[in-house]
Length: 381
Image 1: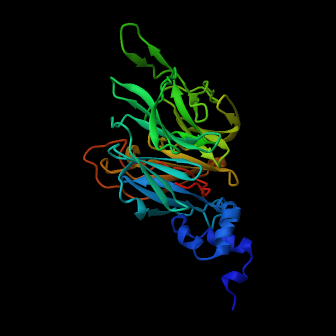
Image 2: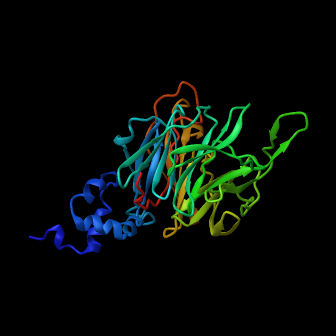
Image 3: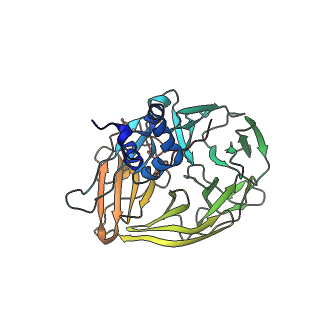
């Protein structure tokens, strides 16, 4: 009788891709070969054949897996995503989730604590901020050239504004003396790439004798925070010009590229970086689609997210259908996955129905995808 020990390493690696990421800690303890395979990167390579990541629903973290192989075939048009709530993280209600190279940073709903989680190793670490401000603060996770992980925090109470940084090696917070000459909206999704964090930012002006004023008509650009120098870099241009009525969002492509989505009415463009670092960027067009006839879909750049599949030449984005004219109940949210591609390719699937809302709230029941091609991390917490 054939046993697991008789199988080739490549086949074992393929089998392990079917195991939920949150169960791998048990799998690794079962057999020395399985543990060795994961450390040697065979499983890491196989895992990239599928799109998986983590999402947030009803203040809880869930794992999500997509299999997009064959989506353009008539017999296999669309595979519904597999979504499972993470029981290990039920101890905290989450308002936002960030990632950096396989580590998850979960921001508590009341902003009283942070939770860092390594899904592959099953390790967690609670971090308490020095001060508790309000919901307008935001966080970023990254690491320096020595692979020392850090957390950047920005707070803005209207009277107090500043930055603090947490160092994992010293387990301590300290005030950071930085002040970028632009505005980073707290609701925008940030992206971690090669240890640094990239933000969508916009111009701001100072009116003499008055408080700082943000000018929404000024177009957006990229801004990078370098966790080695602990400084913001120069403004990095986007590959298009946009205004306040047009949608712009960013995402990761594997671990080495950044993608930007631009929507103007029924026209969708997605660009990817051919080069990116804290001081320079260059772009290449990935996808341009004119949705005719109009679908009525409007990407929510405050709560939505997306990823691209280079092999199938499609983009998958996640949105909430609260403002979709096809939705009858205006007090419910319907988190939905959409797939768009060349030649008018368009598919959609409702992920689930969220509970009733007392009133429409664009920041409740959002489901931002954290990342789409998960590479397990061996970083100890």
